[in-house]
Amino acid sequence: MKKTLYLWHVGQGWIAHEYKQLSELSEMLTERKITIGYSATIGDYATIGNSATIGNYAEIGDKEKPSTLFITDERHTIGYWGQDILAIGCERHSFQKWEKHFEKIGKSENYTPAQIQRYGKIIALVKAFHELEKSPVEA
Image 1 (cartoon, rainbow, N blue to C red):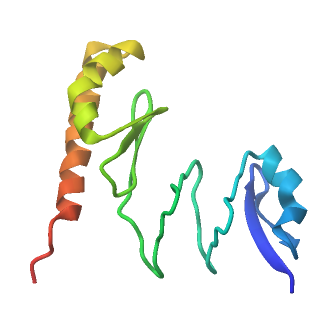
Image 2 (cartoon, one colour):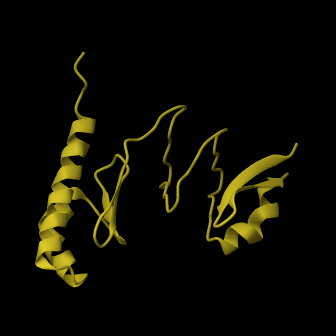
């Protein structure tokens, strides 16, 4: 039975790639720097966005959607995926580390003082969202 993997092609949109064994697509996946680990399964109608990372032993149940935020700002994008981790550009740290070191990291990335303060406020905002998402919902 043939299976279909849809991949986004810039300028062309989503293109279907049919295969019987995933290994048939290995050259194309390697060129695109796409890796799928051993024994990994991706269910029907699943979508995994650009630059997404799913860690070892991660599990997302049927119809579950982790809380996510993606913010585009002056210098780097900010990504949050429902864990105590925040990614800003290529830097990925816990909220605690961001709160303690965001000024130092900002300076090392040549942010202006105003940009550093702005990103500090964004870190606080996303942390507040994270805490809200982790608190029990009252009926």
